[in-house]
Image 1 (cartoon, rainbow, N blue to C red):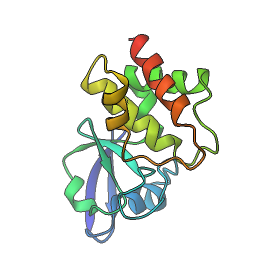
Image 2 (image 1 turned 45 degrees about the vertical axis):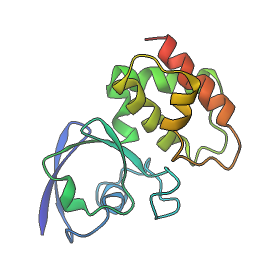
Image 3 (image 1 turned 90 degrees about the vertical axis):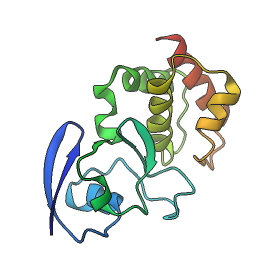
Image 4 (image 1 turned 60 degrees about the vertical axis):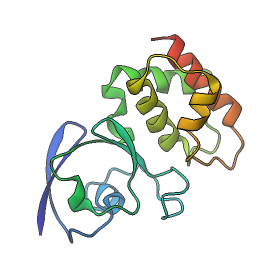
Length: 152
């Protein structure tokens, strides 16, 4: 079946089973490799994308449920002012360590900044609660998000 998806501001016609999880279409059909497959159960956050401006895990949900919606992956996050601020803050604070969870964290932080201009540490922690980082860079990630908010 051919599905039309709007990803990072561009329309893509994709031939796939409509039940295929979005992440496989992003990574395999469209070669957008920045979104990572971690747990495959929507519990680690590595697969996060923005869908209509909201953080959404892409590893379980069927691709046909995303037709007619605006999807932004880590590859398109810098096309937003908030995304550029978050990426710069992650670099400035050395928030990434191994980098596997980083794309999901950057997407989630960008979604938070799109939703609100400022937030206390508790709100930031809640917004990032679904994102696991085994390297332990959480304190730097929190500093990066606060820095990105302050830059706005």
